[in-house]
Length: 374
Image (cartoon, rainbow, N blue to C red; front, side):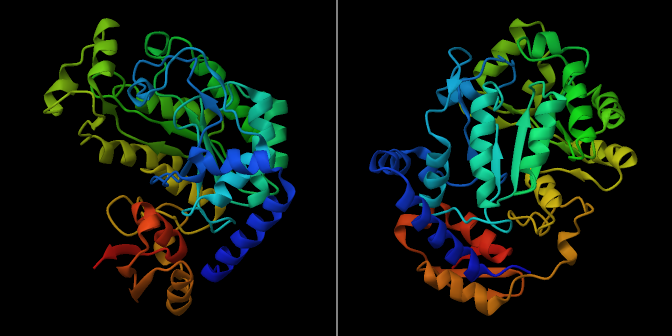
């Protein structure tokens, strides 16, 4: 089991190392960047390699987040600045037991491959579990590079395929499913463990072909599958309608459809997970963080094993020992957080105002327990 105190000490050590190496200009740029302030999500701390996305998938929500489908460009940080920005982030912890890193949340991370590999080559020095989701074609040479980088940090590739029949309408600029299946094959041949990212499952649009998608991905070499639902906005619904898709099932499940991202109820998920387990055994997850945890061999940092999201996968988080309660309390106190640990729950009594917004994620990572504020 890891030491929560050592995570904090490692962060301080790495922060000093990079601070002493970087120029003042780079330090200021990293400190002011959003990666230095961003609160982790359930999947981890999102890392942006690209601004805007060239693939123009109809179900994508980035236009509702002030990004666009045109003018894609590499994110303007240098590799070392990415790392220092993370080390400056009060919610980030380095190391294999530290904060999960999630790449590909708002754009295609391999739109600019040289930039992507340069940044990955620096990020792996932190040792954190890294997960990327992609629709890009990755060659056997790309896969070999990723395998080499995985010697320094766990790398969990998620390959997004949600349709075999309607991709030319749903994903007009993305590589074909056949090319993505080839990516899965290349990664598997390089002895990585590629995972099918079956998200989003869109009611009335692609929910009738998810079994076939899973079969094709498994045959190509996928070692498991993450199954996820669909978030809709007014803009996304209009795109789907304009492309000729029947959206009545979506409308019937969502009371209000406006500019806010709203989750579409997904009662089919349990049955799809059951069918997926027939194909992939226990390597089936309802949350991306669980696939990342399994690949790294660590307890899920979002503690999905406490609650209904757990699919009882091969990682068996629910059977693992938790970090020592006394050390958890000591580590939290170093951060100005005062708490009490009761079995699998951390009761938070006091949190500094400057980290209150994302304190829950930070505490879960340090304690691997459920967090409650009292």
